[in-house]
Length: 99
Image 1 (cartoon, rainbow, N blue to C red):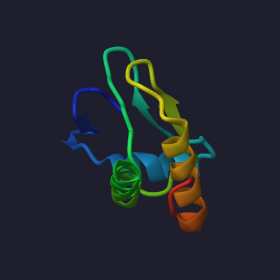
Image 2 (cartoon, rainbow, N blue to C red):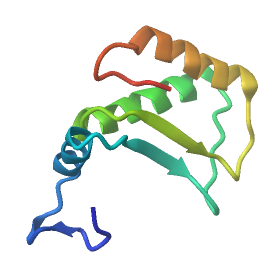
Image 3 (tube, one colour):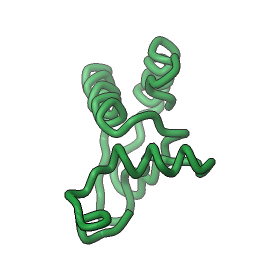
Image 4 (cartoon, rainbow, N blue to C red):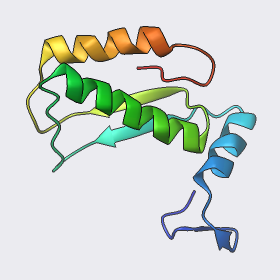
C-alpha cells in the first residue's frame, strides 16, 4: 500500500491490497488510535456502535487477522471494553469481527 492514495496507477483499493497481502501469507491488522487521538467508550450503546462501525470497515476491506488498539488518549472504561469483547463473542465467525 502507498500513502499517495493510488496503487499501480489505479484508484487505491484497500480491499485488493488486503487480499493480496493475505494471499501472500502476510498478516493484516486493522490499527486505530495513536498519538493525538481520543477514544472514550463510556456506555454500552457507544460500544455497540463502535463494534458495528469496525465491522463495516472489515466488511468493506475483507477479513483482517486482528486489531491493534493504540489508545493513548481518552478514558478507559473497563466494563465497556469487556462489553466489546462480549460482542466479539457473538460475532465471531469467519470474516466477522475479532476483537
